[in-house]
Structure formats: structure tokens, C-alpha cells
Image 1 (cartoon, one colour):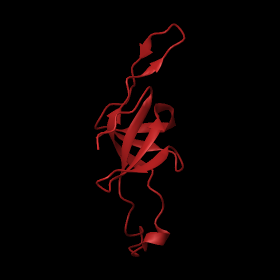
Image 2: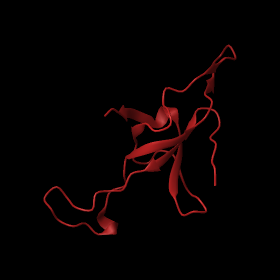
Image 3: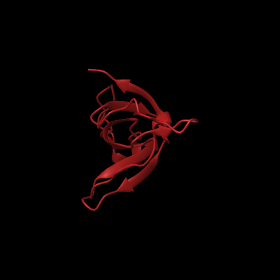
Image 4: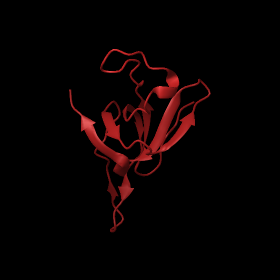
Length: 97
């Protein structure tokens, strides 16, 4: 399933939560925190400004981003892939390599 976001929305594939704590304890699925980092897989055209021009997004496909714990809307594709659709404003930062 190909998803094309509209306007200033982006599609993010969440990264897996850590399976171990920093102390080395293996965490069960129920104790894992919801991930707040993901990889951008699709972006919209951009947001319309007040004068009617499209303002391109700063975020690009392939960027690794940090976002709020409860940001976006979770969806599942036919292939069983879990994705988030959110606005560019919900992204806190782009992780640089």
C-alpha cells in the first residue's frame, strides 16, 4: 500500500523500542515505552502560506526524527507495517548522523 500524505503531513515508520533497560534487564512488551523516534517514509507537498504560495517542508524522506510520545495517528498497512501520520509541526528535531 502506497501512502501519499497531503499538505504538511509526513508518514513516519517508528523505530523499535529497546528490549533491554540500561541496567541490562530484559523488558517484556507491556513494559516497553512507546518509541519517540522514527524514519520518514513519505512527505506531503507543503503548507499553503497566507499569500497562497506552497511552503515546502523542511523534513525529507529518509530523515530520522524525534516526535512527541502521543503525536500523530497510528495506522497499519495491509503488509502489517505500523506507521504514524503526523504534521510537520509535531516533529521536535531531526537526528543528524
